[in-house]
Structure formats: structure tokens, C-alpha cells
Length: 195
Image (tube, rainbow, N blue to C red; front, side, top):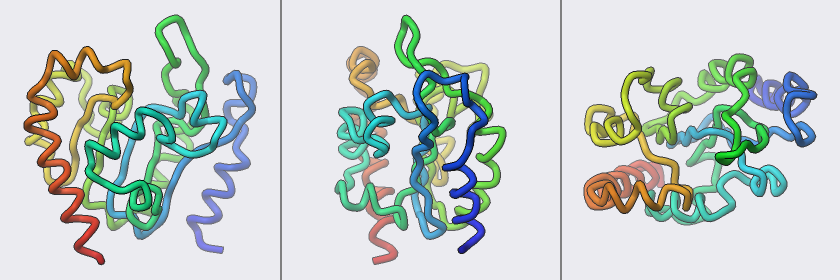
């Protein structure tokens, strides 16, 4: 058993949030030491949490379209790692899902990232991931994404691909015109370099 397997085993036995989240503990993540692209987001939603498959929803459909990637490549852990800021569903509040529980990142994030030496591009989705991975705390999501070129070639801040963001996407048509073609080119170049 590799050191990564031992860590993943510990994560799947984790009970740090026992009693703090509404559902039974069921960590959901996708990691392999060979991964080339890292997707970091908030936390699994209720539907994903029940299925155990990250981005197996309309958000995932949009994200795969943005990336220009097949479902097979997306779920190939040797190509794509998916590490939400928290691995379990945090519950819902009056405005949607609650923020990711911080205990998960505190306990496991640094250790997991050490097992991903081949990452060429990190897609940083939403404010919690952006605060952690880009150290951005004093800017809006729109300002951050507008400055996307400052983070390439290794990172790319993105809005969440959720249908809840349809209004943001309509207000910011530049995103799909300017950012998405570059994202697709970069993903294609990374994925097909190894093949």
C-alpha cells in the first residue's frame, strides 16, 4: 500500500466532522499521483454526496463543456484530480449549501497536495477555493476572474459552473468568449501531451 493509499484510507475513515454535518460522513474526492489537472471547488452538493461521484450533476456537465473534456478523461484520476475544500456535504442554509467545513482542509489538504507533483493546471472554483489556493481575500469573484491571465499557466480562477450562476454568466459574457477558449486549449494540450 502506497503512502497516498494510506492517507486516502485515513480520509475515508475520518470522523472529524461527526455531529457537525447533517449526513453520514462519506468523503468524496478523486486523487492519483499521476494527475495532470487539479480541480478545486467548495464541497460536494447533496446529489453528488449521495452518488459518491464528484460533478455528476448539471454543474459537472457545464464544467466539462468549459474544459472541452470527455467524461472518460474527466473521471480518469491519472488525468484529473478533484479535491473540494471539504470532502463531505456541509448541509444547506437559506441561500443554498453551507460553506465547506474548515476541518477537512486543515487536516488533509497540504498532505494531499504533496502527492500531486505532476499538476500542470489547477482550476480554482469559487471563493473558498480561491481564498485558499490564490490567497485572494480582498477582491470580488468577478475581479479575480477578470484577471485570469495573471494566474496562468499554472492556475485559473473560475466561477462555479452551477446553474445558480446563470445570471453572472449573462452579465459577464466576456468569460465564455475570452476565458473558455484558452481553458480548452490548455486542457487539450496537457491531456494530450502524455498520450
